[in-house]
Figure 1 (spheres, helix red, strand yellow):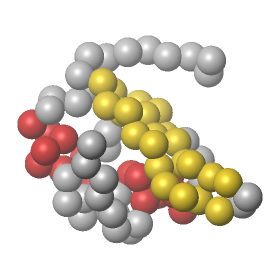
Figure 2 (tube, rainbow, N blue to C red):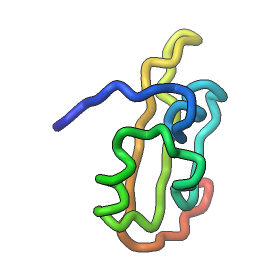
Figure 3 (cartoon, helix red, strand yellow):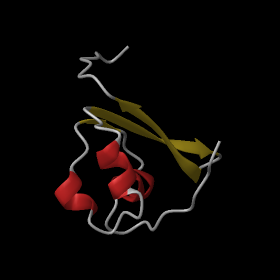
Figure 4 (cartoon, rainbow, N blue to C red):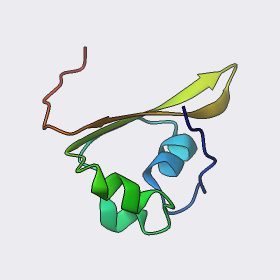
Length: 77
């Protein structure tokens, strides 16, 4: 598994960490111009993207991201 620190500004994972709100849906590539992984993600042909902040005791430790190569419609459960 490959872990990498990402900048908070200009990336979807960064906005999830800062806002502490999850993101579900397509990965908004124009809003991620500063993302160093953008080319790799484009090559993976990601259709669906889900990101949730990982928090403990009021502190954000990171962001869990899930990439789907097919469009998957999920509900709140």
